[in-house]
Amino acid sequence: MTRSADRRAGSDDLGLRRALDDRMLPVLVAAMAFLAALALAGSGGASALVKHWQEGAAAAVTVQVPTPSTLLPRTDGTPGQTRLDRALALLRAAPGVAQAQALSETELTELLKPWLGSGGAGTALPLPAVIQVRLTGSGPDVAALQTTLEAAVPGTLVESHGAWVQRLAVLARSLQACAWLALAVVAGVAAAVVMVGVRTGLLARRESIEIVHGLGATDGYIAGRFAARATWLAGLGGLLGALLALPVLLALATLAAPFVATPQTAAALPVSPTTLAALASAWLAQLKTMPAELLVGLPVLPAAAAIIGFFTAQATVRGWLRRLP
Amino acid sequence: MGQVANGLRDMVRLEAVGLQYERAGRPGADALRDLSFEIPDGGFRWLLGPSGAGKSSLLRLLHLAVRPTRGQLQVFGQNMSHAKRGDLPDIRRRIGMVFQDFRLLPHLSAFDNVALPLRIARLPEDQIRADAMEMLRWVGLAKLVDSRPAELSGGEQQRVAIARAVVGRPSLLLADEPTGNLDDVQAERLMLLLREMNRLGATVVVATHNEALVARHPGRQLRLAHGRLVSDD
Ligand SMILES: Nc1ncnc2c1ncn2[C@@H]1O[C@H](COP(=O)(O)OP(=O)(O)OP(=O)(O)O)[C@@H](O)[C@H]1O
Ligand SMILES: [Mg+2]
Image (tube, rainbow over all chains, first blue to last red; front, top):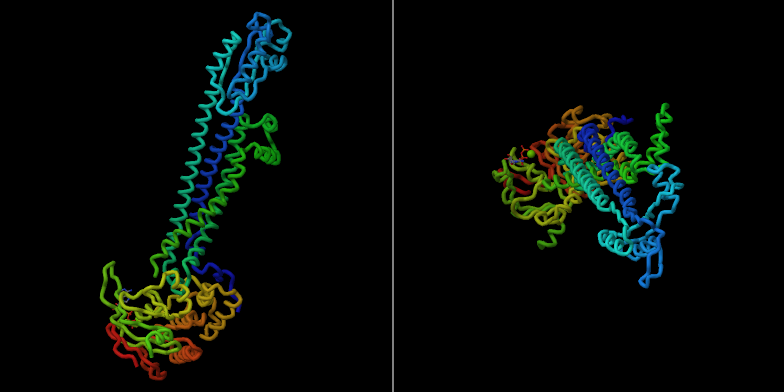
């Protein structure tokens, strides 16, 4: 009395392996997961740019002090502190300033090398002192700072890039919001796909469900059968979509690397990997350059798809079963 | 006997029960009218009457597949007019039903069809295997356990339906024309099974047109005509 394996129903007593087949649903969910991965990449890229810019913005105010070592006269007419020391003292006392530091001679020549050539330090050219100002929170009122400095140390120049960075950051944040919105829409469409699939399955197995219901199956039992199948199919689709998205995202990360990566990782990129192994190791290295958001988000996609599958199937089936006595 | 004490001991109790099906969303003719009777726990009843009298409708009511349109229906001492939907599965699992049209799951083998009530009750798989196989052997289908309903004769399908109805040892066993597709030998074998279940304590209700069978197995009769109870003796 051997029962052939292919005829054994086991937990598939509603015949859902055929009623909810493994083609349409996973393929559609895979497409959604692929789009979700792209949205995640967009969001990750935008947040990396914001971070990058804001780190830059921390030093976004520079102050130039011409003839820094000239002594300023005190109120009684005797010579007091240098122009540089006075400017530094004023800056450090100003609200919104975390730190003010004059660049050293070597830092300055390094900065000016492109214009003055490597022999720049040796020239007798009078260089202004450059003060790098690190800001806190929203930063100082740049116009007020300029007025104060001008009054105390005439000729001082305050340069701020903060407004630009601010605008870029707003743009990046809007892009990020759009990406999240896209993600929400994609999740909604995935849920709709699962719902349609489950409804088709319900109609195909309508009689069987009525019989099983009549035999005393709870709504939970029937919904559980559908949810198990939908979870597996949606999870499979999510995995498929994430795998498909991986090469695309790696390529994007390669393009973005020079802008967001630290110099070391950017330098580690091989110029032309010839063998497959070299390509693989290059991609592995590339993984490190991917934004953390993506590294976490990509493996989470199949799980998220599975969770969407589970809850959508549960809700759809339980809602449908209300029509039975 | 007092009403309350009686109600507790009755397996089934109807008071002025009426049933009206809907046809295309509108109420149709009454299938059952003003039914009042009770069946004590462990009782046996033939359910007789011409075609269209309402036998299947009455069994459907007792199986909790439809709720009465009017009147009070009690099954297992619970009033079905007030019972919560969530309470019904537990009650249904204590009822075995042989449907007139079998209602087997077409994609499942005979074995899996018979195993279904036990799977729904979440029994351990080895017990399911043992019980379902024993039942299939009892109805003479041990060699056809892997066959799908479409590969079975009408009588074989009916026997699978019977095995499925009794495999969970129900306290209330309802059979709608269970001998319709059986030969005399098989019909006698089925009556033996039903009598045995009844002897072991199950309440049994059998709807049939087969007067010869009724004559061979005397028992109390509920007779319906045009949806009304015309005799109960
Ligand atoms: N689902 C339904 N919807 C509407 N009317 C129905 C439905 N089922 C049965 N009826 C009607 O209810 C009446 C009783 O039918 P029922 O099936 O209970 O009779 P029966 O006694 O079992 O007949 P038979 O001996 O032929 O099986 C019939 O007039 C039938 O047309
Ligand atoms: Mg009938």
